[in-house]
Image (tube, rainbow over the protein chains, first blue to last red):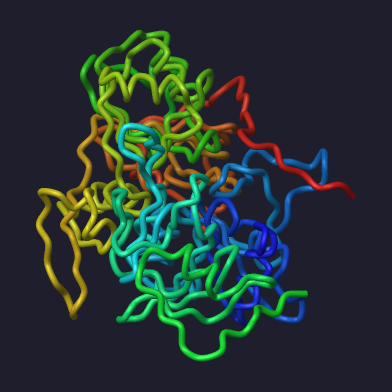
Length: 218
Length: 232
């Protein structure tokens, strides 16, 4: 089974040379730490920066330089700043190659819910609805089950939706899955996890074809 | 040159009244119009609608207006990080319209650019789309979103000149340029108000035509919400 860093490491393998990547808050933020160093990638943060770098060295924080999680960051050589309308032109206009975000629930047809628990938690959707409605390459990073042990990969989302039919791939602590017209296609198992365990933890339609390889993670 | 300079924040906010709709720039606490917010608190203006990506934190930014119950309605994309906000929202004291962030930016830009409405895919199939016109273009579904209408836009820039030209710094730019010229009156506060001719016209982010009043801001706290650092 993977921890959050393990999920981030596996997703980092999906990042290719020349990609502009938007990382959501939570597990996705960790992915920047694990992208191969021999490829050129630029991270976009929707509050208005392309070419986002690591956290600043202690003492060099700048209140005017933050990411979408409101954390202090740095700008790498070649970075650019822009306004919010321009930022979402990049997103809505499909100029960003890969979007990685967290989710509370994903359904077998690729619907995603991650912004509201009625009566309990209403923080807002931020940029998530714009991202999922436009991006062609969306990977969800999340735990396979919630704290109560219930599956987050469902036949139908129970929470208010963020977007419909948009998720292409999911990486959880247990597995890598692709969203297909027939349901969740199991691609890989996390180290030490059996197919039976994945079947038990998946409420939605799970397709298991042949031998399922174990993820390769350094 | 058409002069936009006003002497103080008090002059800049002349005409602000109860029940008005304001746009306020900023993302989190980054690039917020600190002086205008302080003045709105001081004026005690009530029943206002605020269009702002976020709602500040409990004791800073728009949180200061929330504390005094001056805000009737918030139009935002993300409102976490603020307990008083959550309390007022769940108790029904505060009306909240959550809008996808890109839609929020474009509703400002549309108002600035003279578009009454636009189609966006964001929110299709979700509760955001409820009651809105839906249309298909090239096999994909879009919803119709209308431009904002606001009385004042309060923005904050790094540098500005008497002509109202503005330059922003880092990610403090965010919603500020989109809101300039998107309300009946745009008020810009700047960290440094320079004499005309000093800003390079090639480097202007917002041309002065979108700004009606500009003033030299003061006492900027520029609070950091999440201080994250690494060691050398």
